[in-house]
Image 1 (cartoon, rainbow, N blue to C red):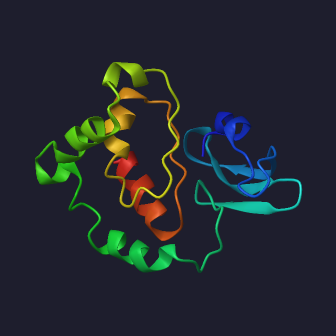
Image 2: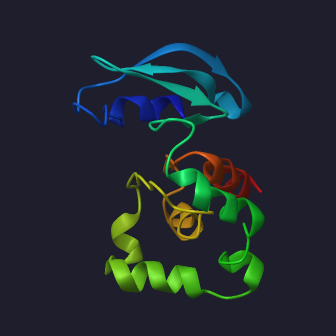
Length: 142
């Protein structure tokens, strides 16, 4: 997780600010582990990803799918532009309107729409949920 993104995060329960505690830094100065503390709750950062949900939650069932079939919908691996085209068609956002913006992508599966947006917004941050988050982040780093 990039340190500069902390100021943009809010506690999902009370929308209050979060402060970073005990960060350990890893690749490219990113926060590899630590904790984000809100007014009444705290959230671990594990392997560069803030965890806003419990380890065993609704995402574990479909998270397994993304670990098994991680590349199936990714344009750069299947040789198409289906995800790229769908993202811009369905959102109605022109690519130029996203340049220089920060994008929060939550619950993105294996990162199907992370790649099209990361090409336009290289400083974006993707905050994801549980097991498929690791897949998504590892694919973005490839």
